[in-house]
Image (tube, rainbow, N blue to C red; front, top):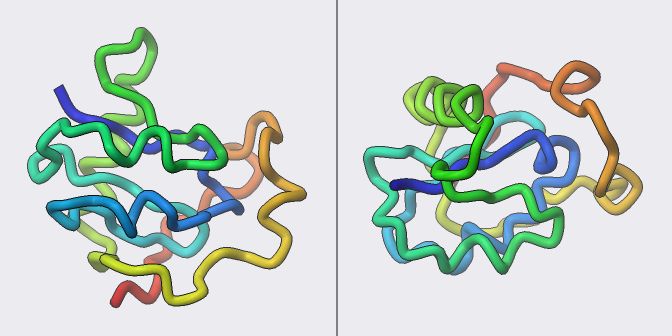
Length: 113
């Protein structure tokens, strides 16, 4: 098992999860984070820290797309291990918004550490 970041993170990118991850398995895109499923140790400390509720265990039904997306982009985006002010100023406006992947997803990398 691993944890995955879903589209609830897009345009929110709160970064609380990054601060608690003991193995630094988060990678930063332009407007969302992903987890490297090979590095995640399934501890689950990140899941309750996410204000957007974007992190879920991959054992839940229908998350295959997100597992693949997390694996793909964690190989392309830079590692991020701390919150350095990357949370967008309008994050709360997008929290809970539906269909964010189709509306806003960017394959561009973030800054990382």
